[in-house]
Image (cartoon, rainbow, N blue to C red; front, side, top):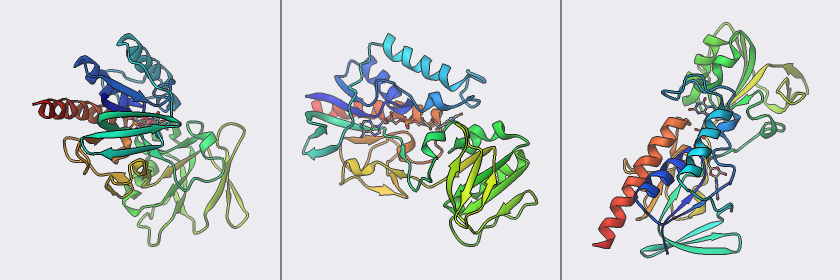
Length: 285
Ligand SMILES: Cc1cc2nc3c(=O)[nH]c(=O)nc-3n(C[C@H](O)[C@H](O)[C@H](O)COP(=O)(O)OP(=O)(O)OC[C@H]3O[C@@H](n4cnc5c(N)ncnc54)[C@H](O)[C@@H]3O)c2cc1C
């Protein structure tokens, strides 16, 4: 039986895997062999301390090399179900089954309510993070889809950078009222362009030209991997030790909530690893 099964090979999973490895824990790490693949999508990363203006590709390569040098191995499988079984967990990945004393969910955010063309252009004119990518569109024309009024401060932040925003709030009574923001009551149905986002099709049949599209959504986490896990606003609910409502089950990174950023994911992965180490020590007593 493994000490821990980590689900997810993004920055949160990597940070946890490194710390658990240093503490000689017996870990199975599920995800993609192409670790930190979302990181590679970032054109330029400006908020990772000590690595100013590193490209997403370079940062992802550094993460990959670090994992390799530490001898971390990835089980390249999607986990379908996790079943709490008393003091252990059953993990089903395709037709493979294994057991672990603890599990750590670092599954990132699952895109929900996507429009046509969005997934293919993520990192190519489509962004989910105003802080990360806003500066790339300085003086340009962008569109913003937003499904929660509490995210409007990000629209206002973007309005300070860009020339013009076509804004699509998916709720009533927006408070955004700025000279360079056009608030639409129609909805985008498709983002199109030759590789990069160049335009939006709207529900009234019209089209608008854009240089980029920001999708600000209170997203849905993959908490339904374990149906007993408690969620809040679509994210997995954790305490300051990254512990979920299920004993022995931890979560870290984007799946626990905003801000969706590398440093938060890495930090939470680290905390989760140390909580798991403490938990395993207590259980062994
Ligand atoms: C284009 C772009 C640019 C960005 N730029 C920046 C930036 O400049 N600065 C910044 O701080 N942040 C940026 N971000 C955000 C950053 O990428 C995320 O916050 C970060 O990757 C979250 O890390 P994570 O480990 O929580 O999740 P993720 O990186 O999303 O990793 C989750 C992993 O879990 C795996 N997984 C999910 N479900 C399962 C399952 N059932 N079984 C097995 N594996 C599973 C996924 O395949 C994935 O590998 C950017 C994001 C994008 C898309």
